[in-house]
Image (cartoon, rainbow, N blue to C red; front, side):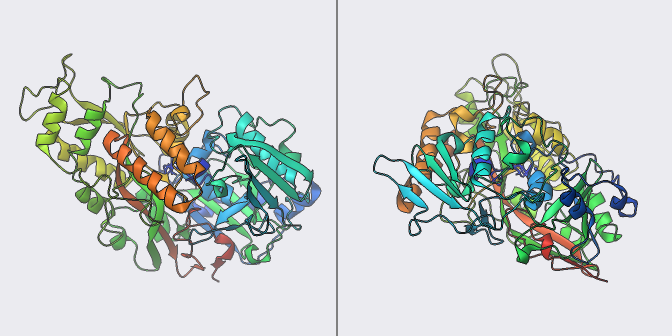
Length: 590
């Protein structure tokens, strides 16, 4: 899904998770100036983006829910919408757009358990013949589509859509990630209702593929969609139809042809507006300018979110840390393993977690593994637990590489006279992350490590700089995880974005370890749970030694709503699709 690492900005498990949330997401935050007030929204005056089909246009203007207008604040605004290219590297592309209008084959429920989506008649299993491993190692999935599944223009969803999605993932210029799709050797479309997908070898994280699926009749026949759907998605296969999208607002209306009656929207219209820094988002909630938001945790949340505002926090599928770009264009020296370890030994990660999350959840826990969430499965071990503030260890590591500290209270200096100062990027206006930067800058000074802080709006960071490897060498963001232990996209040695490969891949740390890459690939090929766990443990130990990034904490989700205006919110707190995942079940009061 492109549930994997956006950046969410948090980033995006997972053949295609977004970063930050960084993010991943995983996730485009602008200046946070609150440009469009709720009272300025007038979607009735705008033409729907829908397709040319008359039925679709009518569906875009009729009301289905009879339940008024829901106004939501979005804290990171995508710069573009394409679900295959780097546009999908931002978690809010998924959370505010794709999850509402684009269908998928398998999905996660609100508690992050895999299940067949409404697009399928059933989940492929060995019992129903949908999942087979042949003696020659060939792996076959048979997807039986739901007979009622249709696109918003009335065209049935068919196996050709599955074939087209596969090819678009591989053929699109600047595709974000091809992990898993490159193992597919054929998608048989002889039966329009049955897609038979053949892999060259077993692929355990198959449930994360084909999220979303694309309409072949609408986008084809060209399978390179780099120039399509960048500023609108003009057809729907989900509960909502995109009425309009711009940098000022996003309007959704019910998809009249959506076949799953349990997900038929209860409101007439959803209007999302950008509120792209902590203060403007909170003020919009407090004044009633917006009815709900799903912000990242921020300092003082419990104190500020009172009165008519109800909020819940917890769960979380995004892991936040310091991601170290070993190929950063602005690096002044090679970012060696010794330097990465030295940074890890200069940090009090318990204090960082407490400052970042203490006002949201009790007893925030330090993340001790590099790629898995301790809240899901048994994959996350204590690989990084031995890292804590240790000046003797920092000194040992740096002096071994020729660094000296002429001033005992100053910075380390290499043989060329360059000080150990690392450029550090994160999301501008994100109070939690800016507080972490201030804390760490003070924390590492006694260890002789300095920082040059340059922050960007999320669109620039997650959709431009990360995919082109033009950041850092250090960035603070979150990456999404999957209930499946797949982490290949993070550590694939061939997935380091570069000019040579068209900046394809999500190995944003430029971590070039063949051992780690092979172990991550083996995890994806292994279908036995015990054997997979053993491989995860091996990879965890390698990562803790090489330190391609420094894990900090699991980023909890936060959903806030005005209880006098909205009911039904808060049930998607744990959802990998964000706190707005179930807005089809929300009601406007009054």
